Length: 247
Ligand code: NAD
Ligand code: ZN
Image (tube, rainbow, N blue to C red; front, side):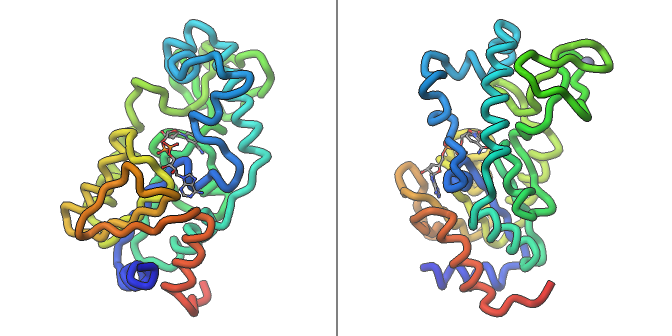
């Protein structure tokens, strides 16, 4: 199975990759649900990740994201992120689309990342929407230099729209690819979950890389590679490009 997928990757002109929280699990970044344990177990997602929750208790939401931002800063990209950065240089038309907000793909060396859900390292104004170039990362919610409004993390909260340009690029890549890899995602959060099926309808090979095949779709053009992405992805790149050209 790995050899078949490697062959398809090697001969593909266009490859689209969709990643989810699982690709960062081996870097020690917890999934959304795992994060809501311990100190935070008493809160609901709507308290922490909605505009309403922020309006109601900005300090609480700010400190939750601050904790996650510090955890991400301490984490390092893993071999899965690195293999995807290598693939970007080996495939003629390559689009990396992520639902993650941790910025680890860029830190692993990926040059072009389509971020569907924003980035936890960036903040923007809750009032005027301007992205802040700099901000003071303390316990208190910082203020916008332009309008004095509260600054919030530049991530997509429940009930918010995805950044339109990112979504458009993701849909175009899915519609035009020969192979799509769906890695470390439970494929339940729309519209990202539909991307592999846009590709499948156009005849692309769909490759699911996950610890489990539970809840994942099956079909003629779907291949499952089960295991941690930090192990599978480097093996896949090594099998597809045994002697990578020097880049
Ligand atoms: P999810 O938590 O719903 O699913 C994670 C998937 O990864 C599961 O299917 C699990 O089986 C799989 N997985 C776990 N460890 C793995 C590994 N080592 N290798 C391969 N697969 C592994 O995550 P999701 O589908 O990304 O959706 C959750 C939402 O939460 C997204 O909207 C995302 O933006 C957000 N989120 C992001 C981060 C991050 O930036 N790292 C972390 C938590 C949540
Ligand atoms: Zn502002």
